[in-house]
Length: 341
Image 1 (cartoon, rainbow, N blue to C red):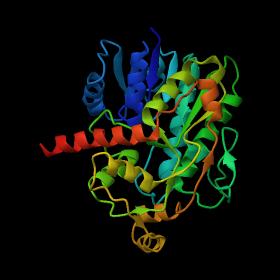
Image 2: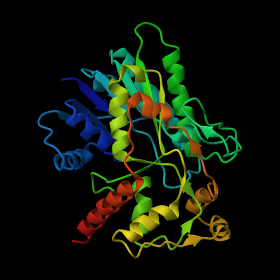
Image 3: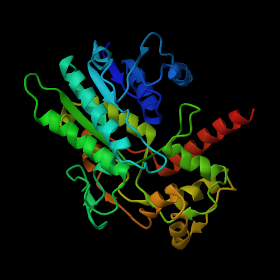
Image 4: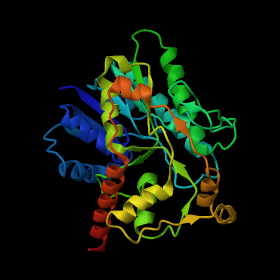
């Protein structure tokens, strides 16, 4: 049985990747920054599948060398998912850039040294779609964000710099070659496997369901179901044609936030707002709120993306948006109800 190291094992995407790996007959070693989260991960997986003895854990930190080489021992593949993802813009962009870049290079160096066959790196459409000065062009696997262009946030910069550092490492290897594929997800939605619903993706839906969002700002999302992200990770890991390629894991068209709200509103959540928030209010609130400042930079921006390489190589058939939104809403509602007990 082939073993896979999954970094950042307690995360929203990583939990689904672990589940998908176990379903497909792989053994998993999950890395955690703090070991006390092991029980949470085990409980989340146990609710879906009996992992038997095929799930183990280790401790790794993106900013520390300790443990990376040991974590790779016996692993044929690595899914490097761990990366900082902030709610608000940091005061110092290096708080995101350094751990994203250095953690990625630690993973790749240790994987190569220990004879890992392939690393699948979780990047983002943030490394593809921004800084171009226009939103009229369709962007895909061959395109890169211009980190010196307009509208670049620290998070966008961190994902772009980290992925470019990874490709530089892969393309300048000597000796036995480590393979790499990259998954570039858009806004990730879908059911959560754990009761940790404080992540950036799930937080938007929590706020919609709990009426913390009185009206939806004019922001648009290219989206993807978290279960599709997991399946594409496993496909990119095992498909011989996936080596050396980037896979935008995203809808082609952008969808207004209010469309998600309308689906929730019509499917059992009548209190979810379907109003839109005028741009002038967002711009005013941005003077006082770092969250609104981040939203302001994305007002009325629609991004056209090309997911054809992902569909063709990985044979991806996306889960319909309405199913994703409804099942995410039900998942979050269940966890919110548990908290009330």
